[in-house]
Amino acid sequence: MKKLERMTAKELRQLEERVRAAIVAREEQDRSELRNKVVALAEKAGVSVAQLFGRGRKRRPAVVKFRHPKNPSLTWTGRGRRPRWLVKAGGDIERFRVG
Image (cartoon, rainbow, N blue to C red; front, top):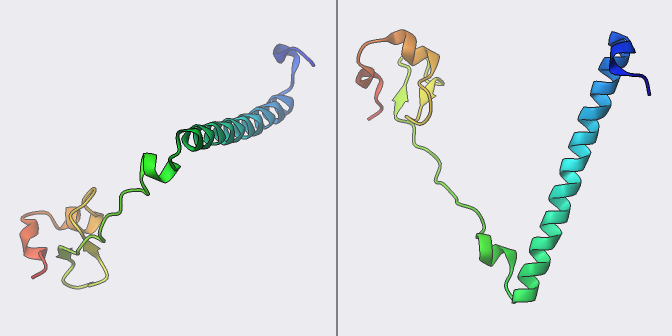
C-alpha cells in the first residue's frame, strides 16, 4: 500500500470509502457480539432480555395544541421546536391554540 502522501486525491477518496465501510461493518459485528453476550448472560441468570430492559417506553401520540388558521394542515403539538409558520406569525401564540 502506498504512503498517504503519495496517493492521488482519487485514491484517497477510495480509501476513505473503504474505511467508512469497514467501520460500519465492525460496529455491526461488535453490536451483534454484544447482543449475543447479553442474551447468554440473561439466559444463564434465568431471565429474559425483555425482563431486564423492558419493552421500550411507549408514549401516547401528542395532541395538536396549535393550528394555523388559514391552513389547517399546519399544526404543532407544543413538543420540540416551534414550526416556522408559528415563528413567522410572531406575537402571542395563544391566538393559534386549539380549543
